Structures are given as C-alpha cells and as structure tokens.
Image (cartoon, rainbow, N blue to C red; front, side, top):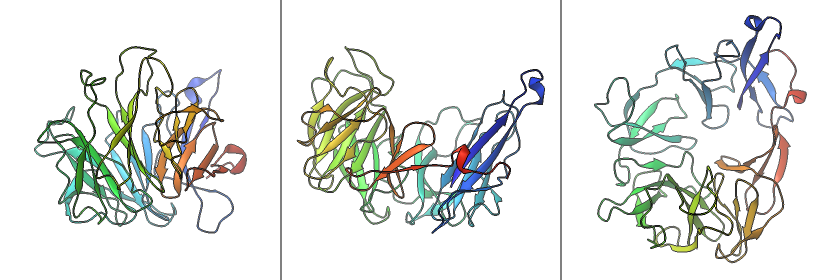
Amino acid sequence: MVLLVQCVTDRDRPENGFCRQRVAALDRGARSWVPRSSPLPEIPPSRGVTAGLTVLGPGRALIEDGGGEEPERSWFTADGGRSWRTVGRRTVGITPVIPAGAVLGTDCVPPAPEPVQECARERIVVISPEDGRRRALARPPRLGDRPRPAAVAEPDGSWWVSGRDPVSGRDAVAFSRDGGRSWTSSVLPSSPAVGSLPPLWAVRVAVGPDAVYAAEVGELRGGEPGKNPMRALHRSLDGGRTWTRVWTTGPVGEPRTITGLPVPGPAGRVTVHGERAPYESVDGGRSFFPAAGGTSWIRRTGIGLLKEGDRCRYATTRDGVRWSEFGLACEDSLPVGG
C-alpha cells in the first residue's frame, strides 16, 4: 500500500488548485494497483504534503498527518484501505514483544515538554499491526538516551538498534532474535581517523546471506562534502557479535556517501549506493569499484531491499544480486478518481 498525491493547478487562478491525497493497494494475488480513498482531506498545492503512510503487514497500514496548522491526526486500516478508523498518536501501555508486521520508532521518555521540540531522553516504541497504536517496548537494549531502531526486521527475523554503549560511550549496535525479549550488544571498532569527529548521525545495518554490514553515517573532514556522508563500513561474520572495520572513508576515493542501506550479497559481495553512483565490492568491503546503474535510495521492506530510483520505477532484491523491477502506482497505471 502506498500514499498518492495528485494535484490540479490553474495557472490563471492559483486559488482554484487542489491536491487529492489517496492510497493505492496491491492486494495479494492482484496484477495491478487499485486506487482507494483515504481519510486525508484535499489540500491547496501551496500547503505541501505533511502525511506519511506506514505499512504494518498485509492489508494493514497507518496514515499519520503532521497537520501543518491543523492538529496531528492518525488513521489505521486492517482491510487494505477499504475502511479507516482514527487512532491516537500517543504511546499507550507497554508491550513485551515485537509482533510480526510491527514497525519500530521512538518517542520522548515521559514527562515530555509541551510542545515537544527536543527530547531529553528517547525510548523505543512499537507500532502495532493489530490496531496501529504505539506501545513502549518493555525490555529495550541499553544504548544511551537516543537509541535509533531500524524500522523493520531483517530477513532472518532480527531487529537492530544503534546508539551509545553506556560504559565506554562508543558507538554500538544491538540485535534481538526473539522479538525484542532480549538483546545482544556490541561496540563498533574505533578508528584514529575518525576519533576527533562529531557524533555519528546514524548506523545503518543490513543482514546478508553470509555477513552483516554496518555503515556509519556522519560528518566527514576533508574532501568534497556530501549530504549522506559514510564514515566507515563494518562487517560481522558472526551475526553481529563482533565487527571488523573494512572501509574507512578518506578525503579521496569512493564510496564517500551512502544513500540508505548497504546491499549485502553472497561470497563477500556488498554494494554501496552513493549520491552519484553505486560502488561494488567483492572482498567484503575492503575495496570498491564503480558499478552499473544510477543513483538510488535503498531501504528495507517486508519484500526485501527496495531500490527507489527514477520516479515510479522501483526494484527489490532478496539476495543482493538479482533485482526485480516494477512500476509502483504510476499515473499511467491508475485510473483517475478515487
């Protein structure tokens, strides 16, 4: 299920313009996307889109509208967008386990300031596929005041969170293979080359068929700047318990940026999609060479790694080698109206 925005503008009378916000669903076994209505209102083109859609399993999704000048609102569907019901945005209660289809996020540890501008401390919350509500995870990993969970599970069912080791203060990751009931944490290798840099922005983890890769994203010094700078790439051959720093970014040489997740393949293959081009390694990330294809954003979904490139064109892979391309809710594949 995806969120669609279709705008109609009038150059002579801009005040007559409007944008219709709908959804499109690809039901199980269906060959094409079907447009369905959404609870979101029509908006003027000048306002901009403030809503987002989160998929929570087959036929289940949550729409959250930032609202702009309007109050924040959320709606949940369990029948592929045929009907929607309002749900609250606040975290309610605690859950001992992350169910299949759930999505992880964060919110402020209460009491939070009103209005919330910046949390003093954050916690991991589970967005439930049963009702679309947020619940705090009962036993999260201990990774400092600002844990950063991956939104969805990896192909082997593991959940990953990055943050700070509370003892050493170094960057660390944790994984759970029992739905968040217990966690195993490990510190990422330190490097003199990046030891004086500001704190990391994120650690992006991807589990492959024979290795786990963790990309450090954060400000670089020296060389051409980028919006998505990659400081280093780590590789684990024991499921994330220990790590080897295989690539440290310097002032020259590529890759220096990463758009989304690394793409792990078999036998030491890993691809990093940079801001200008993708780069491939066949030695576990120790060296890279330019790869075919244009720029893309890579993210994890329930159907594998998703490559988002040109508008309406996407591709997925489960093994990091073979990609299945498809058009996703393009204008020429959907009837007008809703």
